[in-house]
Amino acid sequence: MHGIEKKKKKELTPVELAALLHYRFVRIHPFDDGNGRMARLLMNFVLLKNQLAPIIIKSTDKKNYLFALNQADAGEIGAFVDYIVQQLCWSLNLYIRAANGEEIDENDDLQKEISVWKKGLKGDEKESSHRTTELVLELFLKGGLLDLFKEFESQIGQFRDLFYDSSLEYMLNGGHTQSNFHNFKEMVVSFPGRDSIFNLSARAVLRDFKPLPNPSIAFFPHVAINFEFNRYNVRSENGILMIKPYTVNLSSKDRSDILDPIIRQLFTDVKTAARIKG
Image (cartoon, rainbow, N blue to C red; front, side, top):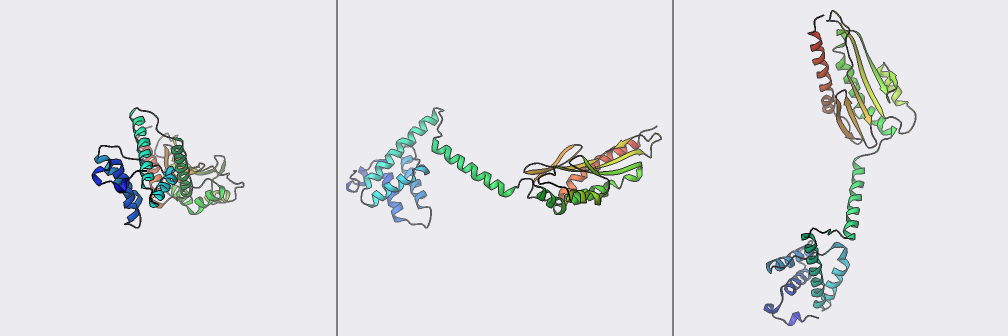
């Protein structure tokens, strides 16, 4: 046991002074919270002032740390000093290993990292659900997807009178096709099977461009929604335009951001075609 209480301040070693300052601050307990953290900061401040390395007290060693403080409360202040000396030696060894480029993660560090990572995954689960038919239908009817297809049909309508042959095709999973929007909606709503809707799309077929002497030219603008396991994406012939988790609907601005480049590209292509001489 260290006879610290019998020593004068000038006789204390830096480690003893740091440990005693830590203990007395915790015993005073001046704040409602954070007293332990402040005590450890004061302890390390003393060590750094005396050109010693700061001490790391691992969270996994909390039981021994509190036991040493309890011994100090019982009058065994030397037991707490001994504990601090042990932690200083462990911390110095850690710093040396790190300086030499050695692996410093210990098994308990790994277990803590795994635990934190798993908690993060659980947090992500709250933000994003996985695909089910019920969830897809909710997005389709109330989450802006149905509105996206309606707005696509409306904007394509600006060009249909320029073609001798024009139509719209609505597809479910790339194979079930309807030419009528109402029928398409009913097909999606009544489609059987859990987790069975993977893709919804709309494609315009614009053939035989009227302004040309030889009108055999066609355009096929389309918009498609792909339902992945934990998110959905919206794409056109130019690639993916937007990706969202299932917990986030398509807003009016989102739909505008999706359709604007599609319609702009179609307009550019139609204007280019109109300048072609037969």
